[in-house]
Length: 130
Length: 165
Image (cartoon, rainbow over all chains, first blue to last red; front, side, top):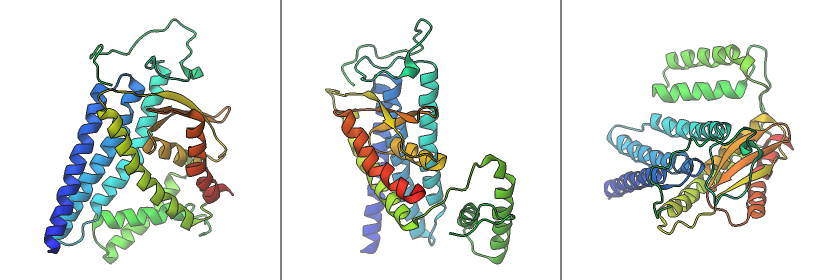
């Protein structure tokens, strides 16, 4: 009985992790500008990795005693993801990448003294998806 | 709080390092305690010049409460972002929001910025130290003032109580 419950929990964690990682990657291809694409990997993919690791943690704890190392991977992922997202956003602002025209707010970091250059490529062109 | 000593400048960091070492080694043998203890004492002394000041945690219990809240919010935020990405009509209202900081110390600000990135559909993009505002990019926001008020109420106020009050 307990085994079945644990197996259910493992399966749930793995599937949830897979779905979250997939949605994060989908966001990476389908969102319109750099700043929006940043949201996918910084949140969804981190939780995807977290879920998968928790599933694997339960599985290996069940096999051969408590395994806690993988919890460390989760913690490190949760510490480093916001920092890398912040650095990516900072460098995007430094390059003055153009945000999507629907974006409200006009930060002074994006006001250029030089003529604007578009480093941003939009491979999907005018796809109907977000 | 444990008072900092000359040969042990960052007691909390040392404790954390020892804990991580023991977890990584998967063993609580005497040798691992000794090796971990030596590392936990040497590493803070070596990297001391890079640290500004030891953050002082005034309410450890409130910190635990804060961590619990953030973990819950991470799951909620993920469901929201997933919904936004999957919505085929794509009615997103992205915005740059300037968030006025009331926190003054660097370490709590770092935690706040990380929390903002991990949780409510927002990424902290730029910290302006000159006029103390944090530039946030939000994926979908209807009410900018409301978002600012929510971040203040939900995250910044508890952090102030934990670290600065």
